[in-house]
Image 1 (spheres, rainbow, N blue to C red):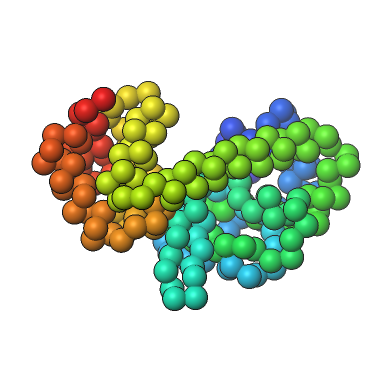
Image 2: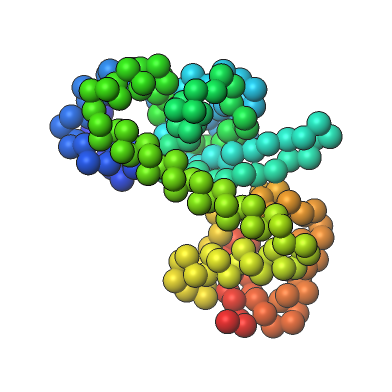
Amino acid sequence: MKILFDKLNGCPLFSGIPEQELPELLDRLEAAVGVYEKNTTIFWEGGRADTVGIVLSGGVHIVQEDCWGNRSVIARIDAPQPFGEACAFAGVDCFPASVIAESRSEILLISVQKMLDTLGDDPRIIQNILRLIAGKNLLLKEKIEYLSIRTTKEKLMAYLVAQAKAQGSRRFTIPFDRQALADYLGVERSAMSAELGKLRAEGKINFKRNYFEILCL
């Protein structure tokens, strides 16, 4: 149990709640831990939105697919961040996107109904939820900005410059592999890889796997 509490340290959902209060709170929430292998679907798009997840280890992708099978990665969620909480408090019946394990991941699952029942007893969780939803709205706004950019090259540079600024360094790692990055930016992987090669040849960036260096700032 102590290991579980250590993994929850820093989870924004439980911000301001002392560790000694967590065992009783998790019991009231009927929390349970599940382990999911890479590419396993945790929540299905269209599935019943009756559970909130918290990443304890690994990471997940929030994914949507259109009727032609084109996949779009909405976001990547790392430990110890939650997912599905916006659906819980928006009162929607079904998940608008799928949640897929990006790697072998340990997930804490919480009953939405139990969380709603608990809110009246603990205003701290309400405040934490509001902060979470506000933060994810900002991330969605950022995603929309990338999608509104016309060319693959411009999308790439906008994303990489934003990552450099967010991490405070010209050298940084990104949370996506090539396919996931292409899905996130809404571009073809082959076209994106070609543009990455051109940007490197032009002396604007350098990279190896998910490590990047911007040379032109």
